[in-house]
Length: 331
Image (cartoon, rainbow, N blue to C red):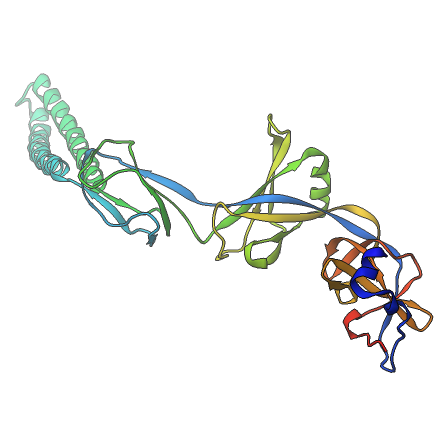
């Protein structure tokens, strides 16, 4: 009351309601859901680091860090002379294998006609059969070498596995790379999720609720029931990791924080609409009705529950307050 007198003066206590009517609400405790709020980290669902699958020198890098990359776009190019030469050699070996196989098959066909007539020996016929089978396998091996050489040549151009933004470049133009060496890292901007750690004592409440509310940067709020609850706890914190899928196309940045709330039970609360609360400087108050006279009464508030706010002290069950504190006219 001392603070109230300093701010507004004791004379305000005697001011009465004017001719204009105002809505009055009755204060009453009720069982309301109790929310637990935890921090969650925003991360991409899809993130990858592309690595070299062949050796060579980088001759061109098409995208840099923070660039948006379409799916399937060429990220960088590696020298391909050695791979092209290997493909040419494999194609030549394939042509040679085809020619040898054609000759072996023709010889076998002639021997098959001559052997029943006794014109050739059993040994010569068996040799022709073996040579024909061997030449067929040589053709298959040569064809496989072509496929391998083409794949190796294709590895000299590195393509984006999905659309997204580049976050890190591990190599420079002109640098020589070898298979397995990281080249570029990035993530998909379309698919995001929030990851939080839930203490074990609250896990049953989260499962029973089945959904959460997220408060994102910029004051945005969404609800989601797409939860993935890990079935094992962290050995360090003894908490369970929970992933919350966000709608596609959400404009959120990885590495930022969000507030996640879910119901963990009910408890008696005294709630008032936000419109009944008056804030002036350090004073938070409501107009409490004494008969037909409104009296400015200081209150202490708790957490916000949707469009209402919890009153911790200053009011009792049965009290009557103005529903819209700022519409009350005093005289």
